[in-house]
Length: 489
Image (cartoon, rainbow, N blue to C red; front, side, top):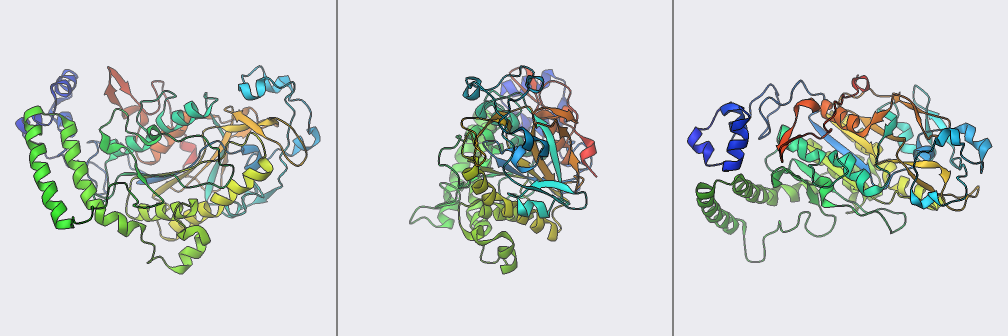
């Protein structure tokens, strides 16, 4: 690694940063890794900018990731966790031997009964291994040999805000860095003209009321602001304030930025705050994005065969399908991490209406994304993750009928799937009891899930930390957490 002269380095660090790092005895090499000017050289054969020296820790299976987040918690028992024996137990009370006194939310704790609600949807076997999948997911059913279905994910959080904050940032309390920010911080970017972390929040089709999404879910927390997710909008300019105002052309904007950078350089020399350098870098990134983002979002050069693969909503801005197509375009432009949040999965009632609408939003789009990546030779080096923040109960919330029911929050077990990124395709991992209530084989905690995602990208979760307020922060928490290597081929 080419180290900067020490005098230059001192000017890009505050006294607090210098003494905190110096007292740790990390030496000049580690100090240089903090410098915004450093070009990191490591064993990673992929050209990249920024990141930490020594990362990836080992040969990565994937160099980028796409996270399809179903915010609100999709019902595992109606989609993937087939429980045929429940058909004979309709409206019977959930046995106490199954619940075992486990806490439930206040939305159902006041009910006189917890009546069992078997899934009203048919399941069929698909793929070489005969994987059971609901009729609500006809396209996902066609790609079971391309994905690994994980039926044993669990969490401690029982309400949406702490649960989604936990799975996205590694802690139920706000203030931590998100998964995408950790990847940006540790691995840097592979494309200087686009952000390393991009977020999309498409519309949804079920009830209008949905759990709010907070910027902290893609925030940088204690990292410099350049590592936070950049949101792509579905209406107007894809990124706020990116377009030049009337009367300002690109040459004029370039001159303005040059003068602004000169002023910021003076501040950096006098104050030495690393955030000033971050500001300089972000202005330059915004200038480059003025050219790269319009090209990214212009679908006019997409072949009709690709548009047909995704379906009619591929060219409808704001749809989940259009977001998935943009995710593929971001992947082929080597954006490190793309996260799509699809809201509306919080079905406490009226599953008969809302769940099919949500599945229709995303089923074909997810299939198309995986197949599109596969046919372009990008799937092997792209990890795709699908899932929500927890699952839903086998017992009914509210009125139960044969034709309709609702389900409460259930953190004890839920289903996710992964594809690409070295993941073993066609497997079903983990198992739950006959009530889809408790895990009986291969439990996978959300911290272990995040450790597994990091592993796919060549990161040892125990060795990636950031000192903040006297603590060594990790995405996976302070306890020893291991990735599930058996998920990889």
